[in-house]
Image (tube, rainbow, N blue to C red):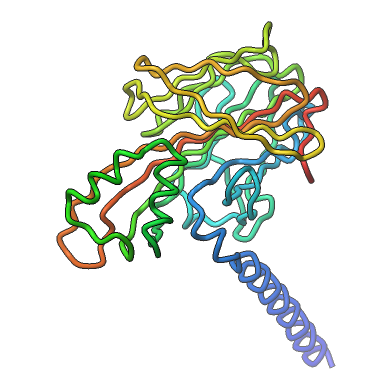
Length: 292
């Protein structure tokens, strides 16, 4: 009888373990089923569930892919990123997770202040199905020069591909939320030179860098108000890499900049361009609360 009981217990435990494993696998597969439009979208950013939290609460952020400050949440998947960390001013620390987690980023801050959360993606690829698609992208992101260079290189008007890498940051306040954004050392990076949660005026200055050197270009500023209305305004980043923008209270912000690189493909069907996307998200909301 004891032998039968033990075997039955082991079988039951085995069934439970197998069921748990299958559940986790199904959960991961479901989170990997994302719309084609989301897969092909260049823009990606970190979306805090709460922009301001009390000490010892869990900081939760979604990795979002989409356009115009609206998109699809991605689950935690180490294959998608090269770096995932936070910095409170005492050095960067890796953020761990479990495959399939939603929100993808979760950690518990142990000190008050302003936290910079950094996400550097792995390389992805997009194919342009029409000349219009490539033209619209170049004009929207302020990299129109690629259109003429593309023609000069004798490349096809469509049917070519591009690789892209995303360098996303978010600012989350913990407790008093005092402190500064920090240089994470990503190849392409936006850095806030003041704390947007403790501004003395409505002006915020930012710096854009490429491989440690200041970079000019176009900055796209998306503002989401409390009624979820999204507006877009663009700014020219000066030759010193800096730009000053005007903020509104009770709003969420997504800032985005793009840099293009030529790829000399030596084989057919290889990517001919590489784009780099730097983004920064933060909030001026009094409550610090974002969409759930």
